[in-house]
Image (cartoon, rainbow, N blue to C red; front, side, top):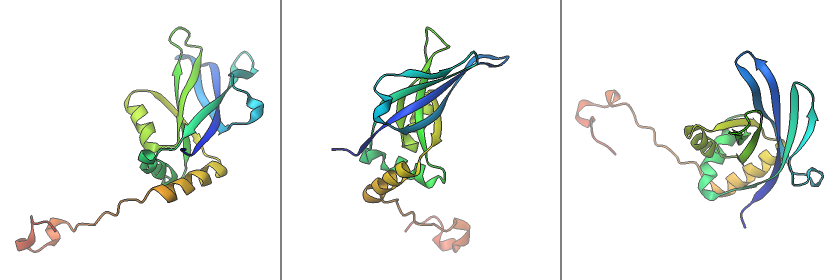
Length: 161
């Protein structure tokens, strides 16, 4: 069984934040799922300018082949949740999260595919859980430093160890 955690995504929608946008959507937070959240999305707060919606029950599994991406996220100095979200094609006032990840590499692939990706900081407990997984499943590749060719004697240039 793969290590996993259930999470909930909070998204904000802002009406006419500037003269170029009718709506602005953003991920406000990601937290570990709680029983009180239930399984269905629901609006938590709404006024004429701002709406906060809870999207619960996102399952996140850790995979060994993404261990490098988890390591890169943790070693960035500010580990984050990555959230892929999309605007509804029929109604641009609506947007919702599609997937979550803790892998820097997976988030990069999403961005390369022109997806919308936001990130929010990891809580200390999720960071520790992810760090334990990385410690057990990933060893960074040790890179041998090569001296620049200009530092080698002329008779050794162009040869490799």
